[in-house]
Length: 171
Image 1 (tube, rainbow, N blue to C red):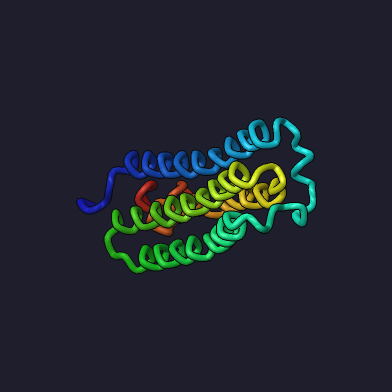
Image 2 (spheres, rainbow, N blue to C red):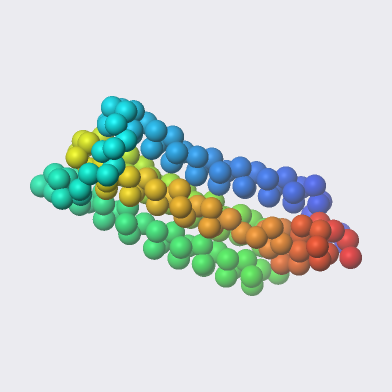
């Protein structure tokens, strides 16, 4: 068993990765709060306004909206490609790193959608509140679904949470 990593190291990597994903998710909660306090001046009811009242003549609005709505596609594609490479990796540490990257990189890409929403609100004003809210809520909804099941996250695919062996639990 010379090639297997230390189980404590695997658990620590799992914790750090989940903390990073949570930090990216929580950043969007902060962005939503900042937007509500600064741009909407504490009036969250503006989120319920009609998107038709948005200043569609502002050239920044369609660009940020398009970027924000298109970013999930490459984020999910990157995730799929990294998980596919991880499934084919023969080295356990490489598999673990690829699975970690398959969480962090798409989560960061989704977080950028929230940043687009925040920038949209600051540039185009409170009239874009429903569109900004849409972009701010996309990462808050998507990032939790990127978290892998506990059993697969140790890189072994064999119940690293203690239920079926794997490198975290001797057989």
